[in-house]
Length: 434
Image (cartoon, rainbow, N blue to C red; front, side, top):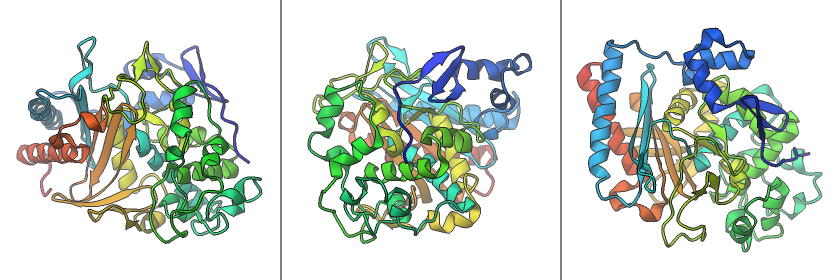
């Protein structure tokens, strides 16, 4: 059983409805933070009033913490403004958060060169495959509750579907295989005709089975469990398993299990073409998808990003992404006894990277990191948590990779930001021992 995926949500009375579930409209969230005492909307709206995202308390003005945050933001802005001189990519947002409760974000460059509007810290961008981390957290919660098993065959939940046996390696793939991309199932987005259909039918609302149909009867790229072959298709199947178990829409489960309790109110589903607060992204002339030069026209995305679903499916701010990084990678998003499974990675790429259960594990000059990257038409995102320093950094850019100079690679931008943040906090005495 899979939950029907309906057309774009409706907005009434300040609430956005996703199927049968309302979420807080962005304007209401902002009002709630500044006027909590006067708003008696509902219990879940009051949750947004009580604290900023991530449950962290804002530092009082003129405190050492506030001074340190202000200095970090000032130096981040200076560093990235110098890097962004004569840049083809319009803008970049940098968010950061520490284990001990400091967090902020800055914007550099432009959100829209056509209007000359500066990129602001609260601007939202599509975060691409970083959305897999929310899906993974929900799956691991279900494992902790005993309703999902990592090494159980996927056929236990989806085997009665009439199309299931048409999946490559269908009879032997496990939940663990889905989560770390070792099913051998090819990527549906690169199958013939898929991108053309997404482009030519921009209002289409995709059902999960329609996405999977692009790999039916295809040859596997590897034996199940043998090698890592990254594919959104794996997380589409994982999303269907979650919906089968919970009898709920995946977005609702992520909202109630992750985004709401952790206060991530600037992270919203990208499940329709009109997304409040989304700034435009920009594509190069060599864009392989042929979507044009601009991702938004009159506030409407050039295609329906809903097709991404469990493979990504969200848009956010860098501050929210960094706060999520701290919560996820300090073992607060799912039962702690599953941590070893979470970081048990397989080889990924040629640089010694590994991939766990929805997490990329890397070695850097600043020590080991946990995180995930994301790409969506017009946007690039990277989230990394630096284990030895208790620091999460997220960057988002409103352009595609072909518009970047060599020194603007998202991972290099994260490294640049980390050096600024740690250097500043160490000098201010706010990170003794880092």
